[in-house]
Length: 283
Image (cartoon, rainbow, N blue to C red):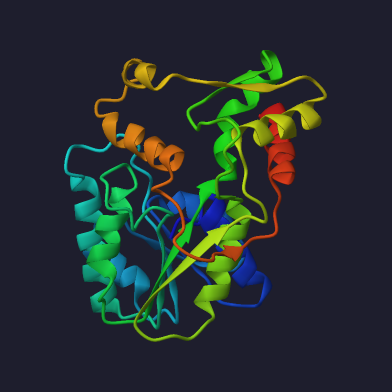
């Protein structure tokens, strides 16, 4: 699942490079054409359609499953509850050899926030009838894509992550896909959790320095006051901004973090920032 995105596409590329047979699960058959030309099978299924998902997962040695992001969820997270129920039903019926679910850092947090969606889905999947691994990656380095224009045009990036000098666990999506592919080939029993971050933790100020180096100009971060978040998010069209605000609080206050040692991906922030700037420059 998710083969048309950064993570799922990376999983597929790693497996194909190893000579594995890959099935692309997509919502729109047309989006699978390029993958079919590379030898993939294609299956059409929506994440909330348990019947179609079961058919897509049937006969698989291993399955990588993920859900589309919901940035503005309704109260009580009904979207996550529906997706978790459908995934659980599909996995129990199809019984692939093992499953890797792409969850997130913070899925074990006790305070309700945007990432609680994955807490709910993990709860629905933790005792499925096949071995399952919850891959919990850190904050995506690729989230800095939204800051390229500001860095290039004004040299000032608004930051909701603060204090600006606080290093946080972050990871490149390429590393998430690589590790997911590795886990798919492992053997285990029951349910396990794999935490994943990049080679070094990253502060907002370190990100500004990476932009400055790549762009050849001065770049700095500017902390957006917490008191302005709700009005700002609502002005951007969000109906229920509190979960997003609480997620940011979790990173800033430290209650969204890894409880122990995490696997480390090799890709640096500087590599990701350079790629993001190149991507925007050619868009």
